[in-house]
Length: 344
Ligand code: PHE
Image (cartoon, rainbow, N blue to C red; front, side, top):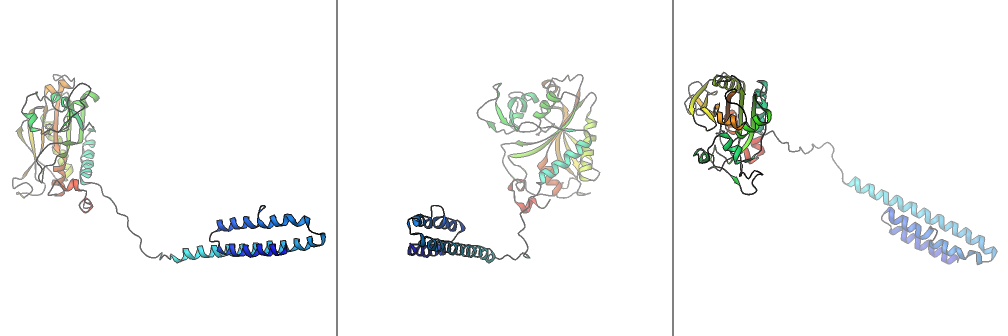
């Protein structure tokens, strides 16, 4: 039995030295010293030995137990030291500068939209929103576009195939923000004083100033005695605040089915006195379409045109942003090139 016990010690030492992790070590400890471990298995036979031998075997067994334990503790220390060495090997120079994370930027269209919104809000306008996928009814019919009116062709429209809306009306990507004039009046009733910034879509040839996706800002002011003089005054005030410079407005006759009379708005060039490339040497820059809201549009919005009237205007935000920041090509707005976006 003494030999067996000595053998166990030998086997144990061999196994312990091969352990690479603390978990393996624990397993090995259990297999030799645990309740069902090999040492205990042998010691079960002690009771059959002569009395005088028992004490000696007991002593030996205790000694072996201690030896195994000592080896386990040593190996444990080895494993821990090795782990620490591995960590220390990946030495870091904490004085090296870090890697700067890429920072985004606010899009120039968002920046100018916020500016426009703030100016109009200070003049008492609320900000409204409407659907980008719109019904044929709100985009055209409600705005006094008769079914076969050629003005529909001026809005090169993306139609959405199926489904139609619940009234069986064709769906399309709105070509302007004007449908929200009617939606706004139906929802908020009159008097109303609102601007509607939003994305619109046109099936258009693309060039440096035209894109299939464009942003507009619509304005609507309906009350009991609003005239075109209010339109001129408010628009002039808005542009003066935006460009931080006294701006003059010029109106030319225009045509839109949903305004009567209709005008085209130009504003005095904020960049020159005597003509420059931006204003094409005319001293004025074209910006917006506008007019007094047509009685038929008021009727679509369940408003009595004999009691209420007012104006609406609409302009391209992309165009305004290009003028404001001197951007030459509308494509930059959608390219998401961080070098472009960071300039503003
Ligand atoms: N909706 C017109 C357009 O997209 C602009 C406009 C708005 C004209 C409001 C008059 C009044 O061209």
